[in-house]
Amino acid sequence: MQPYILTVEDDLEISQLIVDTLCEENYKVDAVYDGHTACEALQNQVYHLVILDIMLPDMDGWDVLQWIREHMNIPVLILTARDSELDTIHGLNLGADDYLTKPYHMGEFIARVNAQLRRYLKLNEQTPEDASVLIHGDLMLNCHTCEATVRNQTIPLTAKEFAILELLMRSPKRIYSKSQIFAAVWHDDYTSDDNTVMVHIRRLRSKIEEDPSHPVYIQTIWGIGYRMGKLDPEIASW
Image (cartoon, rainbow, N blue to C red; front, side, top):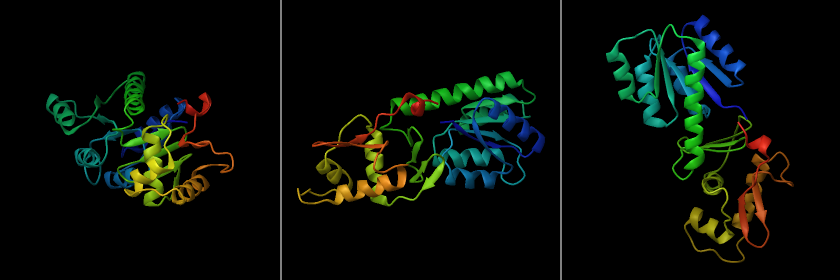
């Protein structure tokens, strides 16, 4: 699956150049041209990197950066014509992960994009218990916005369905029994004749699996419980 990047640049020619360059590197890209649209996009889609210009027509890039930092942890690469040391320090203090001044060489730009994505994806892979975005193949959970996407399509989940999926994805190698899932999600004692967990797992599979009868994401370990399925290398790779 491709890492997903949002570019926020009001100059249409520069924006198109950035999009074309990133697409050549096999990244999936959305382009917006003002700050308010950027914030709306970030609420509706899980991205792995934001490329942000400072001089925007409505809210400036600093305000967008502050909004991002209040709501999520994704990396932000600042692109700007402002080359003063004070601007650089200001951007980094506000939470920018990197800062590149115009004009810049596209080779350096791509190197910085690759570095930010590599670091972000690695950190999320190593510390899923702390991650705000959980990724398992083509399945992504945004724990800040409580949104799930499969193959970049938003999937409507109930609160309990989301909680079960988050529990499994935070410890993808762990097998959870029905009683453990029930205790963690419903915060109540489980009785052996209660099929609540099974019903919710069945509904989850109907929403996230291409073929619910042959699930890829939620695996049944007979006689024990459930865990996230082991992915093929092709599915798991970026």
